Image (cartoon, rainbow, N blue to C red):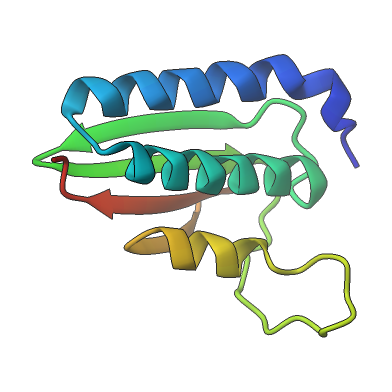
Amino acid sequence: MCDPTLNAPSLIISREALRDAMERAGYANSSISDAELALVELIVNAWRHGLTASPVVLVVITNGTLRVTVADRSPSLPEQKKPNLLSESGRGLQLVAGLTHRWGAEPQKLGKRVWFELDGAA
């Protein structure tokens, strides 16, 4: 497992870049907050489950749709599971699904990409 405290600066930079891009594209503050939270979930999953200290983050806005991709080195594709009510983890992808319009995962040559999309800049 990667130590998140060592990677906090990259998380902060990723969130700031996302916020800046969304503000320039005219997204509402509530959508920006949702996207930031979804991004944090994907990055923490890359650290925790993808065993990747520095996941690659890509933010693209095309035709009013935001797509954020986080790539890690693990080939295991995530799946949204219904967590045990007493479990301390396992709700991250449910959160991402609830905050965004779409999400998914795609294998790549080395690892995978997990992404989400939000429609409609204001």
